[in-house]
Length: 190
Image (tube, rainbow, N blue to C red; front, side, top):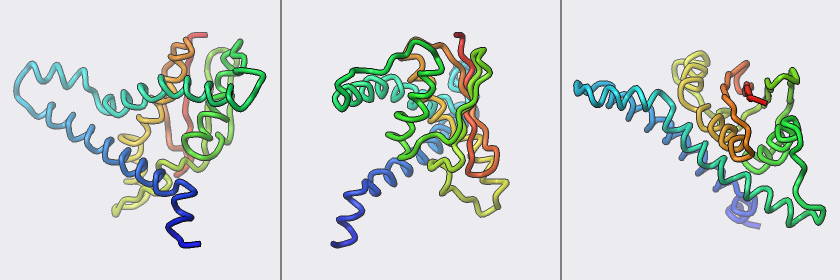
């Protein structure tokens, strides 16, 4: 079989295109925020405050998360005659995110889910594919700084959108613990 056929059958090209698009979206969001902040117009300063660092990228992820949950539940219902999973507890929703959502987006499940059973959840992906290929000529520390600033807003938005779609108010933050390992800290109101 030719190499191109294998690439297409494994969706490698689609994943690469998405990764490049997300990298450019994060860069564009950062540049747009800087341009608005540099403008002397006071109205634009208010706009810059509203469009805080990463908010454009996070908003894209949020909108995708809102729509993605319906699609994944539909697919699961099609595959499984028993219907959709029961989301009677927030922990079951988090398990759905760790298994189904992560697998459909990044090709693998989350490595670890921790909770204090009081509304705080930590999802750990030890080899987060979105940042695993990032590299900076200034070294690992610069790569970590750039990752924290720009590239983790998108998956945070996806998680927040998914949870919001399932009626769970949340705040989501991400941190790079050891490159390319990422911990997503989720605080819910339930």
